[in-house]
Each structure stands twice: as C-alpha cells, then as structure tokens.
Length: 86
Length: 169
Image (tube, rainbow over all chains, first blue to last red; front, side):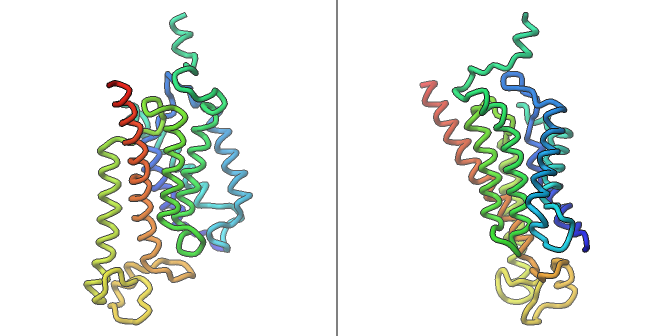
C-alpha cells in the first residue's frame, strides 16, 4: 500500500481555486455555520469511505482525491471566499 | 427587530423552498469535489476532463438555480472566468506544442513516449509517476477540466443575466 500524494495535492489546488469563489456567509440567503462545515466534512469522510480506493486501487481505503478536494474547497473559501462577495 | 431581520434568512427572495436552500450549497460542494475526483482519475477510470468539468459546472449551476444569480454563494467573476479559460487553453496548446517540437506530432504523448523518439529528459519532465504510465494525459485532463467548468458555467450565468435584462425591460 502506497499513498499517492501527487493527485491529492492537485485536488487540493483545484479545490482551492474553485473554493476561492465560494462565499459561505450570505445575509440574504443563509449562514453556513461552523457546525454545518463539520457536518459536511463528516459526511465527506463517510462518502469517501463508501467510494473506496477510487481512482487509485492500491492506496488508502478511502477516495483520497475526493477528500482532498473537499479540504481544498473549504480552505479556498475560508481564505479567499470574502472576495467572492461582490 | 432590525437585527433579527438581518439574521433571519429571507426565504422568499427566490422561488426555491427552504429545503432546497438549506441543502443546495453542501450538495454543490460535494458535486464539485466529485468532479475534481473524476478529472484526476480520468486516465485510468471512466471520466476525464470534460466529464469532471461538467460535474463541477453542474454544482455551480445548481447553486445558481436555487439561490438566483444575485444570491448564489458561488460567484464566478468575469476576471476569474477569463483567467481559468485562458490557463486551460494555454496549458492544452503548450502540452500539444511540446509534442510537436520534440516528436513532430501535435499532442504526442511525450510523457509516455511509446515510440522512443523523445529525449529522455523531456520524458522525465512529463512522465506521470504512477503504474499506468499515462504521460501527459492527466495534465491534459486538468486543462480540459478548467476550460469545461468555466465554459458551461458561463453559458448559464449569461442566460440568467439575459433573463434579468428582459425583466428590467
């Protein structure tokens, strides 16, 4: 079992780029709270477990690229999401 | 009272139900992550740049449909769309030109080099380090994914703006 790190880094970067345009606090819609983010991460871990070793079938028993993409999106949104308001 | 109205979500702003408004953003984020996963596994599993890009665009479009173009949490600015589209197109053309330069064929897979016609140092640069020996295909998938995600999203953003223009008239 070898952890494939390259696609995980690419997934974080790709997620970061898309996530930088996601603004999680909208006054006229709803506020995406910390609790919701934690629930989303727990759901994502559960989902990646069920996805299995996709797309590389010899590393961890979770979909590492999917989980990395979620981390990237949330990171991008947290760091640069405010710019997406206007 | 004023503070309450600020904190209370204005459910009636678009025609979507509260259930849709509560679930759309998490579902959009999950769809975007699935799209990224599809792009990155495109060289060994069904999927690839176009399919993954379409999935990401699907997440963005879903958000626009539920929250409306003004209220969507995923806002793609003109600059952002321009930059991603340009980076995707340039990356694709540059990867193709490397093949033309070193092997004489546009988009020759210089990373895998099945015919042994490319210098070893070029193959080492573009080699994809996994068991599949996919060469430049994963990089092409990333470039195509960027182009497709902004391309499809732009179509929907443009249509929603046209609707707004029509309403103003």
